[in-house]
Length: 107
View: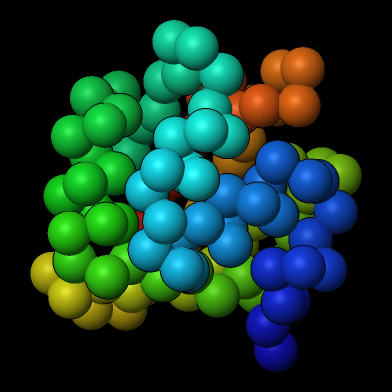
């Protein structure tokens, strides 16, 4: 069972998932706080380079399976043209309505 993006609890996360699924890099970037950071499988990454490589240049898509921590943590199936489909965990830090950090990795 999946949770539709518009049903996610946290507004910033809801909008970020929608931006990923619609391939809207500009909307994604607008949701990030200045100086936002991220990590993948426990290693900090260059955020703009990572999102281009893992999401926007290879048709990334996220299907949320569950949420917790008030919508700040997701378990999801993520797929892109490079890696195929995998079960992933996402954790978001939201500051003043914008995402200041997210962490993702295989679940």
